[in-house]
Image (cartoon, rainbow, N blue to C red; front, side, top):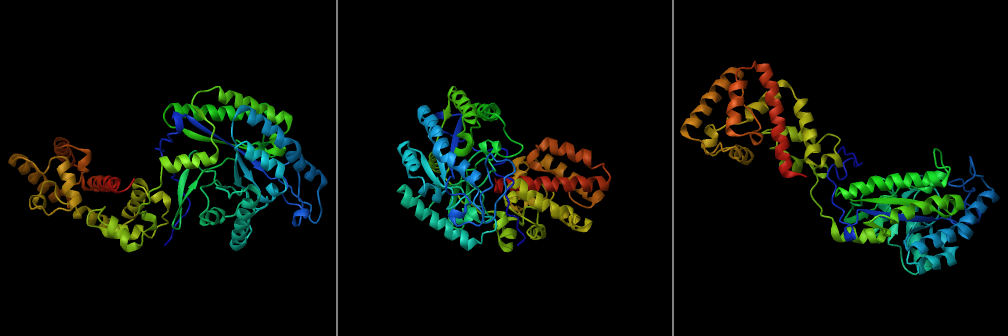
Length: 471
Protein backbone atom coordinates (compact mmCIF):
# COMPACT_ATOMS: atom_id res chain seq x y z
CA UNK A 1 0.00 0.00 0.00
CA UNK A 2 1.14 3.54 -0.75
CA UNK A 3 0.92 5.11 2.70
CA UNK A 4 2.15 8.46 4.07
CA UNK A 5 3.07 8.24 7.76
CA UNK A 6 3.15 11.89 8.86
CA UNK A 7 0.09 13.10 10.78
CA UNK A 8 -0.97 16.59 9.73
CA UNK A 9 -4.41 16.31 11.32
CA UNK A 10 -3.70 15.73 14.99
CA UNK A 11 -6.69 16.77 17.06
CA UNK A 12 -8.01 18.92 14.21
CA UNK A 13 -10.08 22.01 14.92
CA UNK A 14 -11.70 20.50 18.01
CA UNK A 15 -8.96 19.41 20.45
CA UNK A 16 -10.06 17.74 23.68
CA UNK A 17 -10.60 19.63 26.90
CA UNK A 18 -7.41 18.92 28.84
CA UNK A 19 -9.31 18.99 32.16
CA UNK A 20 -6.16 19.91 34.06
CA UNK A 21 -6.37 19.27 37.81
CA UNK A 22 -8.22 21.93 39.77
CA UNK A 23 -9.63 23.42 36.61
CA UNK A 24 -6.24 24.92 35.70
CA UNK A 25 -6.26 27.06 32.57
CA UNK A 26 -2.71 26.14 31.60
CA UNK A 27 -0.11 23.50 32.45
CA UNK A 28 3.40 24.96 32.51
CA UNK A 29 5.91 22.15 32.12
CA UNK A 30 9.48 23.27 32.77
CA UNK A 31 12.34 21.02 31.71
CA UNK A 32 15.99 21.29 32.73
CA UNK A 33 18.34 19.49 30.36
CA UNK A 34 21.29 17.97 32.22
CA UNK A 35 23.99 17.28 29.62
CA UNK A 36 27.21 18.31 31.34
CA UNK A 37 29.50 15.30 31.25
CA UNK A 38 27.58 13.53 28.49
CA UNK A 39 28.56 15.74 25.54
CA UNK A 40 30.98 14.89 22.73
CA UNK A 41 34.45 14.65 24.21
CA UNK A 42 37.55 12.55 23.60
CA UNK A 43 37.38 11.63 27.30
CA UNK A 44 34.01 10.01 26.57
CA UNK A 45 35.28 7.94 23.66
CA UNK A 46 34.10 10.35 20.98
CA UNK A 47 36.11 11.33 17.91
CA UNK A 48 35.74 15.09 18.34
CA UNK A 49 34.84 17.86 20.76
CA UNK A 50 31.34 19.25 21.31
CA UNK A 51 30.09 22.15 19.20
CA UNK A 52 26.40 22.43 20.11
CA UNK A 53 24.60 24.92 22.38
CA UNK A 54 27.29 27.00 23.99
CA UNK A 55 28.20 30.68 24.18
CA UNK A 56 31.14 30.14 21.79
CA UNK A 57 30.23 31.93 18.57
CA UNK A 58 30.62 29.77 15.47
CA UNK A 59 31.73 26.73 17.44
CA UNK A 60 32.78 23.72 15.36
CA UNK A 61 33.88 20.20 16.32
CA UNK A 62 37.61 19.70 16.79
CA UNK A 63 38.33 16.22 15.38
CA UNK A 64 40.80 14.31 17.53
CA UNK A 65 41.20 17.15 20.02
CA UNK A 66 39.79 18.26 23.35
CA UNK A 67 38.31 21.77 23.32
CA UNK A 68 39.28 23.39 26.62
CA UNK A 69 36.99 26.41 26.24
CA UNK A 70 33.99 24.28 25.30
CA UNK A 71 34.60 21.92 28.21
CA UNK A 72 34.82 24.81 30.66
CA UNK A 73 31.46 26.18 29.49
CA UNK A 74 29.83 22.81 30.07
CA UNK A 75 31.62 22.61 33.41
CA UNK A 76 30.08 25.94 34.38
CA UNK A 77 26.64 24.41 33.88
CA UNK A 78 27.38 21.69 36.41
CA UNK A 79 29.48 23.70 38.89
CA UNK A 80 27.47 26.94 39.05
CA UNK A 81 24.53 27.05 36.66
CA UNK A 82 22.73 24.03 38.06
CA UNK A 83 22.88 25.29 41.63
CA UNK A 84 21.58 28.72 40.64
CA UNK A 85 18.64 27.10 38.87
CA UNK A 86 18.14 24.73 41.80
CA UNK A 87 17.93 27.60 44.28
CA UNK A 88 15.43 29.46 42.09
CA UNK A 89 12.99 26.61 41.60
CA UNK A 90 13.14 25.19 45.10
CA UNK A 91 12.55 28.68 46.53
CA UNK A 92 9.45 29.07 44.34
CA UNK A 93 8.19 25.54 44.98
CA UNK A 94 8.03 24.76 41.26
CA UNK A 95 9.06 21.19 40.38
CA UNK A 96 11.11 20.39 37.30
CA UNK A 97 11.48 17.50 34.94
CA UNK A 98 15.14 16.71 34.30
CA UNK A 99 16.14 15.46 30.88
CA UNK A 100 19.22 13.68 32.18
CA UNK A 101 21.86 12.34 29.81
CA UNK A 102 22.60 9.12 31.63
CA UNK A 103 26.38 9.28 31.37
CA UNK A 104 26.22 12.88 32.59
CA UNK A 105 24.11 11.88 35.61
CA UNK A 106 26.65 9.19 36.44
CA UNK A 107 29.39 11.86 36.53
CA UNK A 108 27.36 14.29 38.69
CA UNK A 109 26.19 12.43 41.81
CA UNK A 110 25.73 15.53 44.03
CA UNK A 111 23.44 17.16 41.49
CA UNK A 112 21.43 13.93 41.16
CA UNK A 113 20.99 13.82 44.93
CA UNK A 114 19.75 17.42 44.89
CA UNK A 115 17.26 16.63 42.12
CA UNK A 116 15.88 13.71 44.08
CA UNK A 117 15.69 15.67 47.34
CA UNK A 118 13.70 18.38 45.54
CA UNK A 119 11.18 15.83 44.25
CA UNK A 120 12.06 16.53 40.64
CA UNK A 121 11.36 13.95 37.97
CA UNK A 122 14.51 12.55 36.37
CA UNK A 123 13.77 11.37 32.84
CA UNK A 124 16.28 9.97 30.36
CA UNK A 125 17.97 12.18 27.78
CA UNK A 126 19.72 9.21 26.21
CA UNK A 127 23.04 7.56 27.01
CA UNK A 128 25.17 10.36 25.53
CA UNK A 129 24.48 13.91 24.30
CA UNK A 130 25.42 13.16 20.71
CA UNK A 131 23.77 13.21 17.29
CA UNK A 132 21.82 10.01 16.51
CA UNK A 133 20.72 10.80 12.96
CA UNK A 134 23.12 8.34 11.28
CA UNK A 135 23.06 5.72 14.03
CA UNK A 136 21.87 2.27 12.87
CA UNK A 137 18.62 1.27 14.52
CA UNK A 138 20.17 -1.74 16.26
CA UNK A 139 22.94 0.42 17.73
CA UNK A 140 20.47 3.05 18.93
CA UNK A 141 18.24 0.37 20.46
CA UNK A 142 21.22 -1.00 22.35
CA UNK A 143 22.09 2.49 23.59
CA UNK A 144 18.52 3.06 24.77
CA UNK A 145 18.65 -0.19 26.72
CA UNK A 146 22.05 0.72 28.17
CA UNK A 147 20.77 4.15 29.12
CA UNK A 148 17.81 2.68 31.02
CA UNK A 149 20.15 0.24 32.78
CA UNK A 150 22.63 2.92 33.80
CA UNK A 151 19.89 5.37 34.78
CA UNK A 152 18.44 2.76 37.12
CA UNK A 153 21.84 2.28 38.75
CA UNK A 154 22.56 5.98 39.16
CA UNK A 155 19.11 7.29 40.11
CA UNK A 156 17.79 4.24 41.94
CA UNK A 157 14.81 3.68 39.67
CA UNK A 158 14.29 3.44 35.90
CA UNK A 159 13.19 6.49 33.91
CA UNK A 160 9.50 6.86 33.19
CA UNK A 161 10.06 9.46 30.47
CA UNK A 162 12.34 9.86 27.46
CA UNK A 163 13.77 12.63 25.29
CA UNK A 164 16.78 12.00 23.07
CA UNK A 165 16.85 15.44 21.45
CA UNK A 166 19.30 14.95 18.59
CA UNK A 167 17.32 11.94 17.52
CA UNK A 168 17.03 9.70 14.47
CA UNK A 169 13.97 8.76 12.46
CA UNK A 170 13.83 5.58 14.57
CA UNK A 171 14.12 7.09 18.06
CA UNK A 172 10.47 7.38 19.07
CA UNK A 173 9.59 3.90 17.86
CA UNK A 174 12.64 2.33 19.51
CA UNK A 175 11.93 4.09 22.81
CA UNK A 176 8.28 3.04 22.70
CA UNK A 177 9.21 -0.55 21.94
CA UNK A 178 10.98 -0.82 25.29
CA UNK A 179 7.51 -0.84 26.86
CA UNK A 180 8.96 0.92 29.92
CA UNK A 181 8.12 4.57 29.34
CA UNK A 182 5.06 6.49 30.46
CA UNK A 183 5.89 9.29 28.05
CA UNK A 184 8.20 10.25 25.19
CA UNK A 185 8.90 13.86 24.18
CA UNK A 186 10.86 13.64 20.93
CA UNK A 187 8.22 15.61 19.01
CA UNK A 188 7.35 19.29 18.68
CA UNK A 189 4.00 18.92 16.94
CA UNK A 190 1.26 19.86 19.40
CA UNK A 191 0.23 21.85 22.46
CA UNK A 192 -1.33 18.77 24.08
CA UNK A 193 -0.24 15.21 24.78
CA UNK A 194 -1.48 12.53 22.41
CA UNK A 195 -1.30 8.78 21.93
CA UNK A 196 0.79 6.97 19.32
CA UNK A 197 0.17 3.34 18.41
CA UNK A 198 3.49 1.49 18.14
CA UNK A 199 2.75 -2.14 17.45
CA UNK A 200 0.63 -3.38 20.34
CA UNK A 201 1.71 -0.50 22.59
CA UNK A 202 -0.26 2.69 23.12
CA UNK A 203 2.50 5.20 23.78
CA UNK A 204 1.82 8.63 25.25
CA UNK A 205 3.65 11.47 23.52
CA UNK A 206 4.16 14.77 25.36
CA UNK A 207 5.47 17.25 22.78
CA UNK A 208 8.44 19.44 23.69
CA UNK A 209 9.67 22.82 22.45
CA UNK A 210 12.67 24.30 20.67
CA UNK A 211 11.37 27.88 20.69
CA UNK A 212 10.34 28.58 24.29
CA UNK A 213 13.80 27.33 25.06
CA UNK A 214 16.96 28.97 26.34
CA UNK A 215 18.87 27.24 23.53
CA UNK A 216 17.90 30.34 21.54
CA UNK A 217 20.58 32.19 23.52
CA UNK A 218 23.08 30.03 21.62
CA UNK A 219 21.48 29.95 18.17
CA UNK A 220 20.59 32.56 15.57
CA UNK A 221 18.10 34.13 15.47
CA UNK A 222 17.91 34.06 19.21
CA UNK A 223 17.74 35.90 22.50
CA UNK A 224 20.44 38.37 23.51
CA UNK A 225 19.07 39.49 26.88
CA UNK A 226 17.10 37.96 29.70
CA UNK A 227 14.38 40.53 28.97
CA UNK A 228 13.90 39.08 25.48
CA UNK A 229 13.49 35.60 26.95
CA UNK A 230 10.97 36.94 29.48
CA UNK A 231 9.04 38.74 26.77
CA UNK A 232 8.73 35.65 24.59
CA UNK A 233 7.71 33.43 27.51
CA UNK A 234 5.15 36.00 28.66
CA UNK A 235 3.60 36.33 25.20
CA UNK A 236 3.37 32.55 24.88
CA UNK A 237 1.88 32.23 28.35
CA UNK A 238 -0.67 34.99 27.74
CA UNK A 239 -1.87 33.42 24.50
CA UNK A 240 -2.23 29.95 26.01
CA UNK A 241 -3.77 31.29 29.23
CA UNK A 242 -6.41 33.14 27.21
CA UNK A 243 -7.21 29.93 25.32
CA UNK A 244 -7.60 28.19 28.67
CA UNK A 245 -10.07 30.85 29.78
CA UNK A 246 -12.06 30.02 26.66
CA UNK A 247 -12.20 26.35 27.65
CA UNK A 248 -9.31 25.20 25.43
CA UNK A 249 -6.61 24.60 28.05
CA UNK A 250 -3.19 23.72 26.68
CA UNK A 251 0.30 22.79 27.81
CA UNK A 252 3.22 25.23 27.77
CA UNK A 253 6.65 23.58 27.65
CA UNK A 254 9.77 25.56 28.53
CA UNK A 255 13.26 24.15 27.91
CA UNK A 256 16.30 25.12 29.97
CA UNK A 257 20.01 24.20 30.10
CA UNK A 258 22.33 24.66 33.08
CA UNK A 259 25.17 26.24 31.10
CA UNK A 260 22.82 28.72 29.43
CA UNK A 261 20.01 29.78 31.77
CA UNK A 262 22.36 29.32 34.70
CA UNK A 263 24.19 32.52 33.74
CA UNK A 264 23.01 35.43 35.91
CA UNK A 265 21.76 37.75 33.19
CA UNK A 266 19.76 35.01 31.52
CA UNK A 267 18.30 33.70 34.75
CA UNK A 268 16.91 37.15 35.57
CA UNK A 269 14.54 36.95 32.61
CA UNK A 270 13.37 33.49 33.64
CA UNK A 271 12.73 34.59 37.22
CA UNK A 272 10.72 37.55 35.96
CA UNK A 273 8.54 35.16 33.98
CA UNK A 274 8.04 32.74 36.85
CA UNK A 275 6.94 35.56 39.13
CA UNK A 276 4.55 36.73 36.41
CA UNK A 277 3.06 33.26 35.83
CA UNK A 278 2.65 32.58 39.54
CA UNK A 279 0.71 35.81 39.80
CA UNK A 280 -2.15 34.25 37.81
CA UNK A 281 -4.88 31.95 39.10
CA UNK A 282 -5.37 28.54 37.53
CA UNK A 283 -1.74 27.82 36.62
CA UNK A 284 -0.50 24.27 37.13
CA UNK A 285 3.26 23.60 37.27
CA UNK A 286 3.48 19.82 36.77
CA UNK A 287 6.37 17.51 36.11
CA UNK A 288 5.93 15.65 32.86
CA UNK A 289 5.18 12.44 34.73
CA UNK A 290 2.28 14.30 36.38
CA UNK A 291 0.97 15.28 32.95
CA UNK A 292 1.35 11.67 31.77
CA UNK A 293 -0.58 10.27 34.73
CA UNK A 294 -3.33 12.84 34.34
CA UNK A 295 -3.67 12.22 30.61
CA UNK A 296 -3.72 8.44 30.98
CA UNK A 297 -6.47 8.69 33.61
CA UNK A 298 -8.52 11.42 31.93
CA UNK A 299 -7.96 10.71 28.24
CA UNK A 300 -7.16 7.00 27.92
CA UNK A 301 -6.50 5.76 24.42
CA UNK A 302 -9.11 3.80 22.49
CA UNK A 303 -8.00 2.01 19.37
CA UNK A 304 -10.21 2.15 16.30
CA UNK A 305 -10.10 0.81 12.80
CA UNK A 306 -8.34 3.34 10.58
CA UNK A 307 -9.04 3.61 6.84
CA UNK A 308 -5.40 4.23 5.94
CA UNK A 309 -4.42 0.93 7.58
CA UNK A 310 -7.11 -1.24 6.01
CA UNK A 311 -6.44 -3.92 3.43
CA UNK A 312 -8.20 -3.40 0.12
CA UNK A 313 -11.00 -5.91 0.71
CA UNK A 314 -11.88 -4.44 4.09
CA UNK A 315 -11.65 -0.88 2.77
CA UNK A 316 -14.10 -1.62 -0.05
CA UNK A 317 -16.39 -3.54 2.28
CA UNK A 318 -16.49 -0.60 4.68
CA UNK A 319 -16.68 2.30 2.24
CA UNK A 320 -17.83 0.79 -1.05
CA UNK A 321 -21.42 2.02 -0.53
CA UNK A 322 -20.52 5.60 0.37
CA UNK A 323 -21.02 6.47 -3.29
CA UNK A 324 -24.28 4.73 -4.14
CA UNK A 325 -23.73 1.26 -5.65
CA UNK A 326 -20.25 2.32 -6.84
CA UNK A 327 -17.62 0.30 -4.94
CA UNK A 328 -15.09 0.98 -7.71
CA UNK A 329 -14.57 4.46 -6.26
CA UNK A 330 -13.41 3.03 -2.93
CA UNK A 331 -11.26 0.48 -4.74
CA UNK A 332 -9.44 3.20 -6.65
CA UNK A 333 -9.14 5.49 -3.63
CA UNK A 334 -7.39 2.75 -1.66
CA UNK A 335 -4.47 3.06 -4.05
CA UNK A 336 -3.89 6.73 -3.24
CA UNK A 337 -1.21 7.98 -0.86
CA UNK A 338 -3.40 7.60 2.22
CA UNK A 339 -2.23 8.41 5.74
CA UNK A 340 -3.46 9.66 9.12
CA UNK A 341 -5.00 12.70 7.43
CA UNK A 342 -7.44 10.34 5.69
CA UNK A 343 -8.61 8.59 8.86
CA UNK A 344 -11.32 11.21 9.38
CA UNK A 345 -14.58 11.75 7.55
CA UNK A 346 -13.29 14.89 5.84
CA UNK A 347 -9.99 13.32 4.91
CA UNK A 348 -11.42 10.11 3.49
CA UNK A 349 -14.14 12.01 1.67
CA UNK A 350 -11.44 13.97 -0.12
CA UNK A 351 -9.75 10.74 -1.24
CA UNK A 352 -12.99 9.18 -2.48
CA UNK A 353 -14.13 12.40 -4.16
CA UNK A 354 -10.82 12.64 -6.02
CA UNK A 355 -11.52 9.32 -7.71
CA UNK A 356 -15.11 10.29 -8.47
CA UNK A 357 -13.98 13.62 -9.97
CA UNK A 358 -11.23 12.03 -12.05
CA UNK A 359 -13.54 9.34 -13.47
CA UNK A 360 -14.79 9.53 -17.03
CA UNK A 361 -18.10 11.32 -17.72
CA UNK A 362 -19.72 7.94 -18.43
CA UNK A 363 -18.49 6.55 -15.11
CA UNK A 364 -19.82 9.52 -13.21
CA UNK A 365 -23.11 9.25 -15.11
CA UNK A 366 -23.27 5.65 -13.94
CA UNK A 367 -22.97 6.84 -10.35
CA UNK A 368 -25.79 9.32 -10.87
CA UNK A 369 -28.01 6.63 -12.39
CA UNK A 370 -27.26 4.34 -9.46
CA UNK A 371 -29.17 6.71 -7.20
CA UNK A 372 -32.85 5.92 -6.60
CA UNK A 373 -35.73 8.26 -7.34
CA UNK A 374 -36.85 10.26 -4.34
CA UNK A 375 -40.01 8.66 -2.88
CA UNK A 376 -40.04 6.40 -5.93
CA UNK A 377 -40.98 2.79 -6.58
CA UNK A 378 -37.92 1.33 -4.90
CA UNK A 379 -38.71 3.25 -1.75
CA UNK A 380 -42.31 2.06 -1.81
CA UNK A 381 -41.12 -1.50 -2.26
CA UNK A 382 -38.54 -1.03 0.58
CA UNK A 383 -35.71 -1.96 -1.77
CA UNK A 384 -33.43 1.00 -1.08
CA UNK A 385 -30.03 0.64 0.51
CA UNK A 386 -29.95 1.19 4.26
CA UNK A 387 -28.24 4.53 3.70
CA UNK A 388 -30.84 5.77 1.20
CA UNK A 389 -33.69 4.54 3.38
CA UNK A 390 -32.42 6.50 6.38
CA UNK A 391 -31.74 9.60 4.28
CA UNK A 392 -35.20 9.69 2.73
CA UNK A 393 -36.77 9.10 6.13
CA UNK A 394 -34.86 12.10 7.54
CA UNK A 395 -37.02 14.38 5.37
CA UNK A 396 -40.17 12.32 6.01
CA UNK A 397 -40.20 11.09 2.42
CA UNK A 398 -41.29 7.72 3.76
CA UNK A 399 -44.50 9.22 5.15
CA UNK A 400 -45.93 11.14 2.22
CA UNK A 401 -49.59 11.68 1.47
CA UNK A 402 -50.94 10.19 -1.72
CA UNK A 403 -50.91 13.63 -3.33
CA UNK A 404 -47.28 14.28 -2.31
CA UNK A 405 -46.25 10.90 -3.62
CA UNK A 406 -47.94 11.55 -6.93
CA UNK A 407 -46.14 14.90 -7.19
CA UNK A 408 -42.77 13.28 -6.59
CA UNK A 409 -43.44 10.55 -9.13
CA UNK A 410 -44.45 13.12 -11.77
CA UNK A 411 -41.37 15.27 -11.12
CA UNK A 412 -39.13 12.20 -11.16
CA UNK A 413 -40.46 11.09 -14.51
CA UNK A 414 -40.17 14.55 -16.07
CA UNK A 415 -36.64 15.08 -14.72
CA UNK A 416 -35.31 11.72 -15.93
CA UNK A 417 -36.94 12.18 -19.31
CA UNK A 418 -35.18 15.52 -19.77
CA UNK A 419 -31.77 14.82 -18.21
CA UNK A 420 -31.25 11.06 -18.37
CA UNK A 421 -30.51 10.53 -14.67
CA UNK A 422 -32.48 10.84 -11.41
CA UNK A 423 -32.91 14.07 -9.48
CA UNK A 424 -30.25 13.98 -6.77
CA UNK A 425 -30.14 16.15 -3.66
CA UNK A 426 -28.62 15.69 -0.22
CA UNK A 427 -31.89 14.97 1.52
CA UNK A 428 -30.42 15.38 5.01
CA UNK A 429 -29.70 19.05 4.24
CA UNK A 430 -33.35 19.64 3.33
CA UNK A 431 -37.01 19.25 4.19
CA UNK A 432 -39.80 17.88 2.02
CA UNK A 433 -40.81 21.40 1.04
CA UNK A 434 -37.26 22.56 0.18
CA UNK A 435 -36.72 19.40 -1.86
CA UNK A 436 -39.89 20.04 -3.85
CA UNK A 437 -38.83 23.66 -4.41
CA UNK A 438 -35.39 22.56 -5.65
CA UNK A 439 -37.01 19.93 -7.85
CA UNK A 440 -39.24 22.52 -9.51
CA UNK A 441 -36.36 24.97 -9.99
CA UNK A 442 -33.71 22.58 -11.24
CA UNK A 443 -35.84 20.67 -13.71
CA UNK A 444 -35.68 23.68 -16.01
CA UNK A 445 -31.85 23.76 -16.10
CA UNK A 446 -29.85 22.51 -19.05
CA UNK A 447 -28.47 18.99 -18.68
CA UNK A 448 -24.82 20.07 -18.40
CA UNK A 449 -25.68 22.31 -15.46
CA UNK A 450 -27.71 19.57 -13.82
CA UNK A 451 -24.93 17.03 -14.35
CA UNK A 452 -22.52 19.30 -12.47
CA UNK A 453 -25.09 20.03 -9.76
CA UNK A 454 -25.98 16.38 -9.34
CA UNK A 455 -22.31 15.38 -9.03
CA UNK A 456 -21.82 17.98 -6.30
CA UNK A 457 -24.86 16.59 -4.48
CA UNK A 458 -23.49 13.05 -4.79
CA UNK A 459 -20.30 14.23 -3.09
CA UNK A 460 -22.32 15.91 -0.34
CA UNK A 461 -24.32 12.74 0.26
CA UNK A 462 -21.06 10.78 0.53
CA UNK A 463 -19.66 13.32 3.00
CA UNK A 464 -22.70 13.03 5.27
CA UNK A 465 -22.52 9.24 5.14
CA UNK A 466 -18.84 9.28 6.12
CA UNK A 467 -19.55 11.60 9.05
CA UNK A 468 -21.79 8.85 10.41
CA UNK A 469 -18.90 6.40 10.16
CA UNK A 470 -15.76 8.32 11.13
CA UNK A 471 -14.74 11.17 13.43
